[in-house]
Length: 141
Image (cartoon, rainbow, N blue to C red):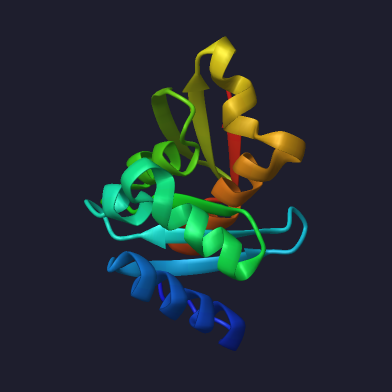
């Protein structure tokens, strides 16, 4: 799917790509949770994080907001699992009936990490999954 970025999002992409020397595929400015979510090219997540999280910390200081990184994937199932990191996802099943829903199996002890504080992680995952794979919702099982 083709994603349109706002001018602010394009500036944030340029800043992150300059700082981390990685390819950013998407950028979501999440006003509800006061964070910026970057979708990073598959295989470049370690470089995006930087040694000891150094790159993320530097970008967070420059933009004055928390940053969430998501690694791109080749399939919708892998994409949803990556979007819910750091939670350990056991399985993702995509159901296409009236709506397209991703059912995600997460260990009970990782539900909090999948949801995130005030729902910030699962909301970001839902937003990105809708933008990139047309998934209408994500349900934890």
